[in-house]
Length: 298
Ligand code: SF4
Image (cartoon, rainbow, N blue to C red; front, side):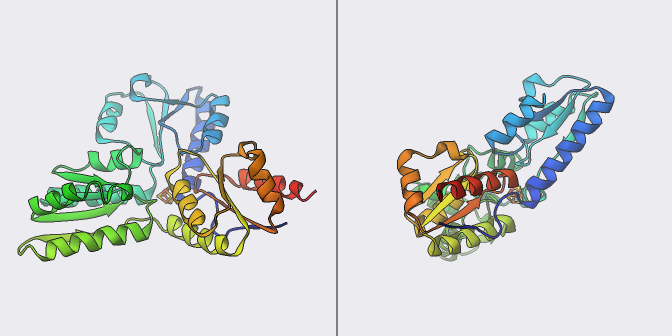
């Protein structure tokens, strides 16, 4: 079995930065003897979060913040309301790991909504990144997920007709083809409404684009594909969508223990297996997967 790890797999710039800020916070806290907590999981990788919990760095919500502690803000960002709750504490040390790509979207929607634009967001309304983005919008907004393009097309048409100025953004981990489809659809509707304006920003992060492109290319050339990453990770989910469209033997696991007997039989029959990993999957988890697949070679 030939094993190939896709280019641009694993930890992205934003997650590397978040890890480094968290490690620095843990070191500083050791010296000052204060507790470090994460406000929401730092990243969407349950194994990494469990490892930090073992070291005493727990995930908390705003109701569990205590004075004289260090609170680390997750890489997906927080809502305006969560920030206001944090600001009520005078004795906490704040470490903000919000990815700069996410911060940019916050700034864009804040500015455009203050200029009177209604904001159209393509993404998952339950995801912490999208909740953070919507909290920054002062006016009206509409969130649509690609899986709702058909079921919510009437609501989208009403939103478009009801607002003379619309500004669109996409969740950083979105698939470009979906965003292009949405923008094309809205542009067509707006073109038929004189006086209406439609602006859109390119907000899908480059790390996501590169991971999806490299994984898609590798999936075309291999017999099977393994995607390593948290089941709650949005970017890993998109990677899995990309590879499974190109390779019917695609598996998404957090660790080798997640493979079923039948998955392992398929992998053993494969002459070539590709590995890709989400932006929140550390190098050790990719190496672990490679070793496991090598062990199947007998
Ligand atoms: S996937 Fe992109 S937006 Fe998300 S943390 Fe990484 S670099 Fe930032």
